[in-house]
Image 1 (cartoon, helix red, strand yellow):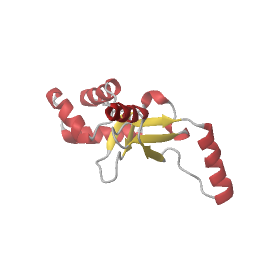
Image 2 (image 1 turned 90 degrees about the vertical axis):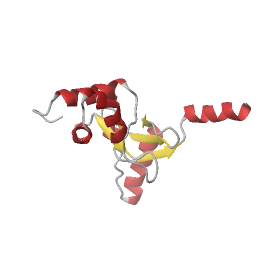
Image 3 (image 1 turned 180 degrees about the horizontal axis):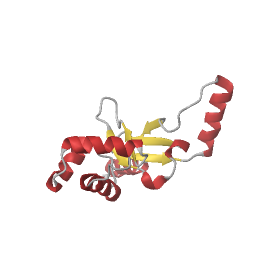
Image 4 (image 1 turned 45 degrees about the vertical axis):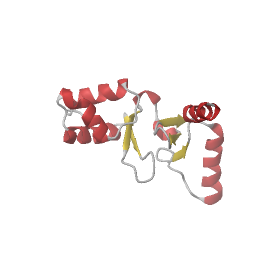
Length: 139
């Protein structure tokens, strides 16, 4: 976060995101932190700062859905890998894959287009949700 912007409320928001696997919408986060006297405007303001600082990622889990936020601070440089979002549970996953790096290079060399890996998100269904589907099919 920007220097001089570290407040009790900001620390509460960051601690909550670090301890609780997201994603969360700003509304959900504000509701979860209401008892700790963190207001909705404060949540939005701090989420912006956390995104700018690279500790939190903003993404849209489904078309037309509200923006979701997830803590990514412990995952190193998010600009060097792709992300995947499960369209069922909404979780954000980091994808370090050599084959995608090769594809990125191909697109740049052969098509003159440089992909923004930090903002490129692949949508699908995660292994946990697929596993739940298989269990439900068997019952």
